Image (cartoon, rainbow, N blue to C red):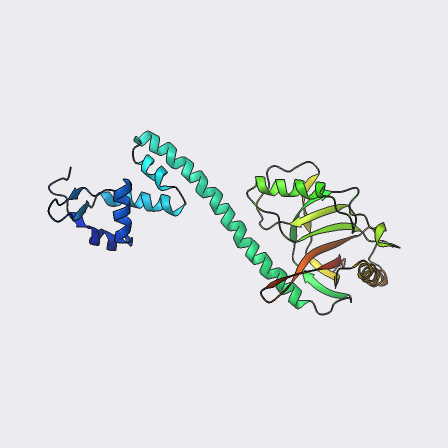
Length: 282
């Protein structure tokens, strides 16, 4: 029923007002999502009322967040009280999607940062110094993880924790072990394995043995190299000698990051490691 004082809009007019194609209104009419208030029997022209614009705003919003047309049609049959409950559920979906979009945003920023760091490495297989910002990490205590053997049982709790928080596992991961003399690669045992956190938000539910730690800001001694067993030992010995020369190695840890190398549009199958040690007092 159309009120006599209410202005009717042609399908062309409402299309321009809402920036929706005319064919969309034809389709919505066919499936019963958004029907005209009046159809001229002779010309078959569709007419809409100005008051329908409110309903159309809701339809567009629900469609934008991914609500199915079937659910949108169902929502229009609800009582005001039922519609409030329906919209409350959609609101929660929106909040989750906003978090996921934020994570994607941070992933892009972090990937860009890692590429910039890779490009800025001044030399491979030699020690260099660089300033680093604070990095939050999600870490798990380990007892039997080594350079050559990192059990899946440690990465699963990290991934599960991030999934519960609506996040994803970072493709970059690393380990923490004591700075000391090692004779062979089999002598290295991690105290922690970790993945960088993409956001600063609080994580509510941590899995057992999982904790949020911080790699502190400061100046670090670093060495980067394409991973192989022989290169690892050689690179670590250079880092160890550099730190010992500065007399900074007492009760300290080495942070190690393992990441893929990139070349143009191709993600290569090679990986490089960066081992770094915080230079105290700098």
